[in-house]
Length: 252
Image (cartoon, rainbow, N blue to C red; front, side, top):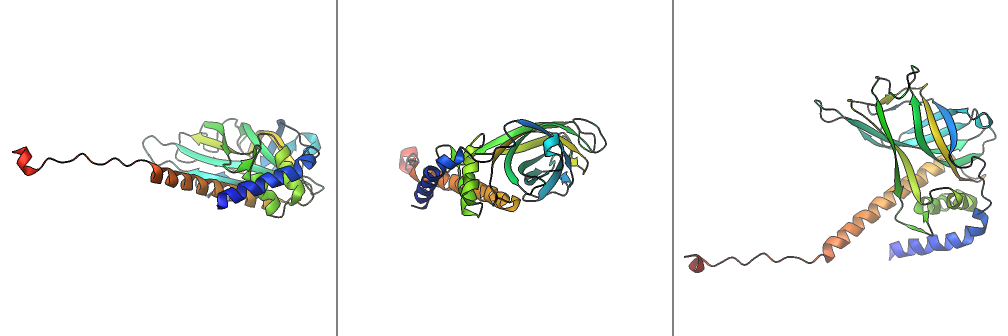
């Protein structure tokens, strides 16, 4: 069975890199506060799932000038015009430093200041709600999600796989979920995000495009596995025979 084979391969990879995982690059650390300056827009008007965005690190000083990249995962403009509510979900996924070292990261959104310098609102002045969506990969071994497994398969190298296993919240893809009671949500270049960043490891062969690919593969595989499981459950659920209907003679 294909799912079993993937699980077996992931288990073998886990065993192969356990020793390496302990020494995978972790310069960024865990829950380190970053302030980043958005350099491309994020908007329910123009952004589409899969679109990438970038931001430049302002703080802390040791990472200043580094480039953070991520992609849009879900866009929901308001449908109800009388009581509008819009939502956009996105994730920061890589941090590339001036020496071209790229770290895979997870980031929790702590605060936002729009491009006009106003805190806790978007460009239209709408107060935003924020949260973090942790979606566990359904494939994995020992807490390592398919995203980490796919890293080695997509050219990231054995080191990138080890880095995925060494990072915090193993097996989770963390997205930032932003909502507002408005027709749209917009963040223009110049917006400052305050993030709690955790390194998921690094390797000289890792690059931002590979990370985006593996995250997309992870999401697609999770969705396919969920659909397959639901279909199998429906097939095995006992059917209920309809109650017998009385004959015309019995009803008279």
